[in-house]
Length: 101
Figure: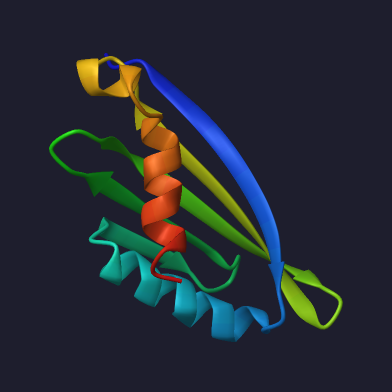
């Protein structure tokens, strides 16, 4: 059983939730996430992430915030390997998503 560590990040954008849902889905595809799951009723997305040095998953929740949207990103990465000593796997997963957003 792997040892995992999570981080959560929240930020606001000036788009409505439907626009952000499609933007987040596109960002996950561009970031090479696998097994993307979208719940349009709850405005949530989840996906798995796997590279040579990073293994984990991401969960994204879109919440209404005035005229915009609050994006809550929770990423979890396995920290039971040698590569996790040099950089946080959870941060790398979050960055892979945010770079493509």
